Length: 271
Image (cartoon, rainbow, N blue to C red; front, side, top):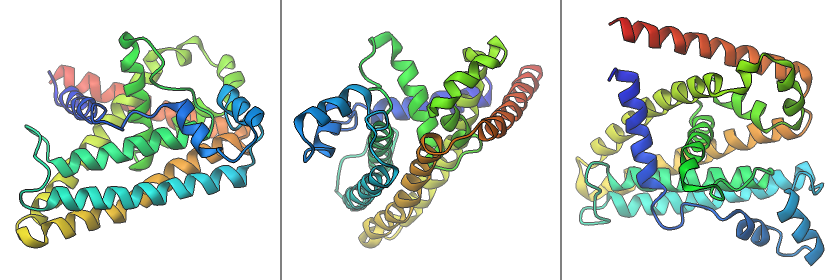
């Protein structure tokens, strides 16, 4: 197994552990009902049925709700990371620091909440055998949040209503996993590298045990807000004012990443 494949599998194994933590998987219907609890019953039902975008929720309203979610999760994440960083705090996983697990637990929960707010379907209403598809989606969303190259471009393309029509004009290859998979793999490698750096930074912070929790929590607090805002901006761009020119620009970036990923894979195979 070459290094990229090991990195990809390592990231997936982390995410698989993370989504088993209670509360990480978000029930789309329950979430939307809670977010729009002050709306009349019929409107709430429509929002759940077709999603907030198709139910004509405004750009301003959705962005306001999304930003509020980021703030709430940011504070939750900072608190959880503080506890995990303290000596004798939350028990460590077998191979992954507990504060890292909690950081990604809250990040993945926030990712689901943001995309559901912008009209995406429930990731967990598929057959168990399709969990891989949900995992790919989470990798994409987390890639956007961490600023991985190409992640925002592919998410905009997938999410935008206009793209559903424009994708039909592309070669059939564009509609298959031969395109989707290299992008996910590229993002997985980028996230894996970032995750390694974060684990290292948090590990160093624990060298002074008494203040370890404070430093760890501070890192989380500083990173969660920009992460959430990156995904909000990508979804906002996809659903409000996304043009054919935007699609062509995104598609060009995606193609470049596919070519680079395929070249790296061929090089690894030769080695």
